[in-house]
Every structure is written in structure tokens, then in C-alpha cells.
Length: 431
RNA sequence: GUGGGUGUAGCUCAACUGGUUAGAGUACUGGACUGUGGAUCCGGGGGUUGGGGGUUCGAGUCCCCUCACUCACCCCA
Image 1 (cartoon, chains in turn green, red):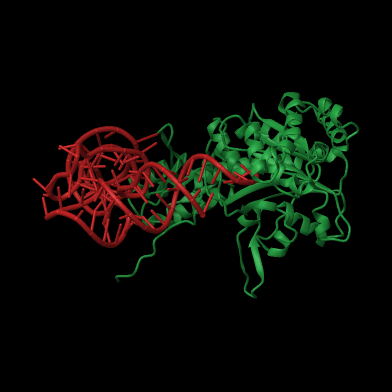
Image 2: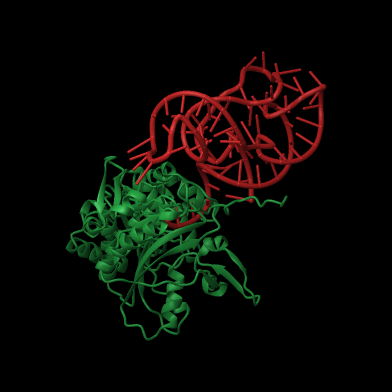
């Protein structure tokens, strides 16, 4: 049988996840879900595939558009893999007018971007997204940020920063500086890089994109001088965006969010085009990995699918980046095998006895593995050792004739014979 | 998509300026130990040195192409 072999390979930028990693991921996802639900949010899921017009109909992602995985479906319709949850959520809201507002949901699923893979950047990755739909008040922003804060705190993060800004402020500043609206998004994308490339770098970038230095200079000087909302108020008094953030900061104080961990950042702009109000990003100083979470208000996006517009605000946690950060900061939950007992096979003559022991333990709720082959015991013990299974039960001829089982504690290396009648009590103890 | 770096066993890495049959640790497997795992000792399998072409008496090593990974740019979670 000389068959042509297929070369096993994973698609670039995507990953298999083995049991140990899965258990750690499930643990962290469990914590995140718990926080979400404790704050009154419920889960939804949406399909991986959306019609292309839904994904990109009105150029919702701006420059990101080209990173969408696109293809034809079986009927030749243009379709693509979801790029984030904000757009699918908007579609869902538009299709379900019966929903009670405000609608609060979370969504934890993979998304796909045809990006060049790098440290902390993948083509298939998971987002944990919380949104509030149908609420105009800054209380919604405060709630979303409070939840984010709770998630990071619960996972053990000590040093992280929630950066906050408002697209409305940026708009006012552009207008004030005499930058025409057509350059708005170019300005945002350039500003966003200030921390890495410096103010001069931003100016250069803007010049490249057609904004001359004598015009961008005014804006950049302003941003450099105005470190606080109060500073900005001198420049653009009675600005709606400033008032919103002032209110938001008050609410965050009421939520008792540590004042040191959130701050106004006039340079924060975010790349996606659909944001209309407050925007936010969570960053850590170590590891150097970009933002761990990002979001904002998108009051006009749902209106793309409907006659009327519906306000909405949300934030997304990048799950894999979060896991990398947890690992680097030594905050990763320890791997604990869920399997508690291995029932070994002595030989084929004693299989039925071992099966009934395994069945009994399983019925009692003890995660029990049964060795599904007939090999020598040393191999089965090695298997248990490798899997970090804490107990091995052997049911051989001696045990069967005495109506007992032998239980070995792998950690202490001690073992005992136990009557079948005592097995239930033992099982409850080690469960 | 553009530019740099790196590709040797499942994994981590060796192999002087090109020079016999490409090694080691680990992992896997068998035995010492026929009712018991982590230690020790002995044995075994596993490689078209990412792939293709070229230079040479001779290429893992030099040159070209290609692919993959990776870093930076771009952009973001």
C-alpha cells in the first residue's frame, strides 16, 4: 500500500489547541463569562459567515476592509468571514425589532482577519465582546468600562490602563484646526500612532496623506498642550464630547473604578470608522503586545440596516492577547487535569469487573478514564502519570475474588485495597 | 502587500575555513523489572539537512529560485 501522503499543515496564522491549553483557555473564558453575566449580560452567537454587503456595505471598517476573508457561496453570492462582532450585532438588532431595549449581550467566538501573523496577531482569533444596545446615556459607557475593569482585576492584572477619548472631541478639534472632513479618518489613524512614532512622525504621516504641515501643526500643538479635559475646555468650550467624558468619569468614580487605571488620552483615535462617540482601549506596559481590548460608541452603525438609528456602545477583549499577557505576567491559571481516576485493565478475563467499577465512579460524577486496550500494567501506570491522573484503580484476580479494588495514589505512591462497599464514600471524597 | 532574519529527528540544538555513513539531549519504543508510573542502565525505530536548481572531485555549509516561519512597516484584539 504505497499511498501518496498528504503533508499535514495548518493554515497560516491559525492554530490547533491541545488539551492543556484548552483547559487553561476554558478556565479564563469561564471567569470572563461569569463577570459578564454577573453584570446582567446574556450570550448570543452568530454565524461565522456573513454576506459581504453586510460586512462591508458602507465601508464600515475603512482601511481594514481589505483584510476581510471573502469568497463566493454556493449560489455565487459574495460572502465573507466575520471580521468582528460589532457589525454582525448590528445586523442582528436590525432583524429583531421585538428585542427589549436596552439589549445587553456578550459574544465569545472566533473572528478572522487576513492580517500578517506576528506576535499577538493571528488570522483566526477569539474576541470577548460586550455591548449595550439602545442606551444613549454615558451610564452605558460606564457600565461597559466597569465590566472591563472587573474582568482585568478578577484575572489578576495589577497594572493596566484604560485609555479614553471621544470622537466628538477629535471632530471639534479638526474643525477648530481647519482640517477638512475628508481628512478626518487619515488624521485619526495617524494620531493613533503618536505613542510609537512621536508627534513629528504623525506630522510626516499626515503630510504623506495630503495634510500639509502648516495645517496639521495647529492640531498637533493643541494635542500636545492639552493633557486634560479642563485644558481642552479652554479651546473648545461647551463641547458635547467633553461634557460626555466629564460625566463618564463621574460615573466611573461612582462605580469605584480605580482612578489610577483610567485616563483621558487626547491621542487615542482608533482605526475603525464606525465609532461616533467615546472610544476606549485597554493597554498593559508589559508584555509589548498592542492593546488587549478596545471599543466605543457606534450610534450610526445599526442605522445602516434600518430606517431609524439605534445607539450602541461596546468593548471587545482580545482573548489570545489576554492569554499571552497572563502567561508573561505569571497570572495564568494552573492546569488541572479534569480526569481523577484511571481504571486499568488487568486482562481480558477481568474486564467486566473494571468496567463496572468505572461505570460506578462515573455515575457518582467522578471523571474517570478507562484504559481501552490490553497492555501491561506498567504502561498503563505510565499513561496515568503522563496524563497527571491522580488515582489508578486495578481490578485483577485477587481483587475480584475478595470483592475489592486496589487504589493507588500516584502522588504519594501508596496504595490500598478497598472493599467495593466503601468505593462510594471514597469517590465522594476525591471528586 | 514591501523590506530584513531564520529554516538540520516530534521538540531544543550540534556538525573547524565546503571533506567519510549528519550527531546529542529530550520524546517515542523494547528490555533489565512476567500485578505498578517519575530514577538508573542497555538496546531500537525515526532525517531525500523546508523544496527545486546551480557551482564543485565533493554541498547541511557557497550561489539562484521558491515555500514556510519570524521581526519591522501597514493595521489592529
